[in-house]
Image 1 (cartoon, rainbow, N blue to C red):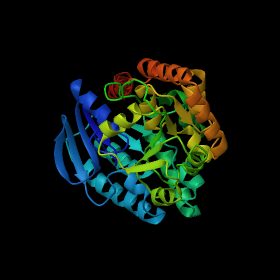
Image 2: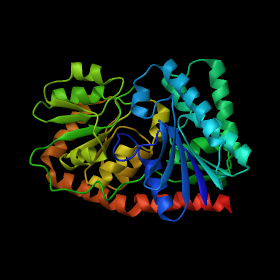
Image 3: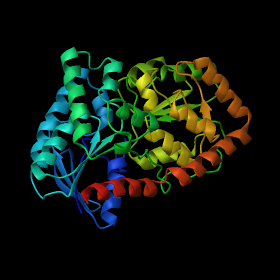
Length: 379
């Protein structure tokens, strides 16, 4: 089967960010399929058997995109959509098209390629756009909002299947009028070979790894660190808010910068006692399916989440972490102090998280589920 895979942010383990498209694509190749990946970048290359077609003029990683202004980011998304459309309209003819959003503008080359090749489209929704940028205030123009909603509807209608990464995203897609039977849940995944449980660290350490943008409420983390001066915090990553956070942080907060690769993130998780998955208190963000949560499960560390939705349900139901309301710095400090005083709870939650990752979120399992959707529509 020839798969045309469209994703602006194609990142391998050598980069920083979500590696879902890379991990899925290399597994598709390993199962005998051919994958042509159209992404932001320069030139044409082969990566682990994946035919990677890079198109210039756009952000190639989401962390860089979030560090720019809303206007510049939107313009870059538009440039990529135009260049990716030209690339997607060139051969070879695909048996199926797999497009992953955000940005929602990926629907432009997806729809064009589906029409050009008369091939079935599977549209993947990793975040609910345009709902997320509208609620975040990044897409304030009413005319652009209407256009974005129209593009969203068109992508859902044209797609044979819509893959949602969380129950909340699935419900959001269905709420637009998509039949429930058309939407398939394939959440983010845990890389069990990369993130592994390690012996408990000698000193209680709290970590965060990922983007430090407008969508990530890390102010409460800084304030909690101020209330726990003898607890080290490590915030690894980059983004629009990093410099501001670093200026206001107490001495027990370390900012090592963006990771050189996923191995560095795995090493940080291994020496952590608990790992944070934090977002701004915006309703749509509670539907997210963040990579860092599944990395935390795989590492066998308690996950501290601040979204009152399916993330809270997962960690509390499986006793794999703790929920703290967004913005509650005192509550976060209190929960972290409790964990430090109860190492047996830290060990139990970490063990439960790893078991959950192995049972429900193994990358091989979920790549197989996504591939089954592609094979079904291709038939």
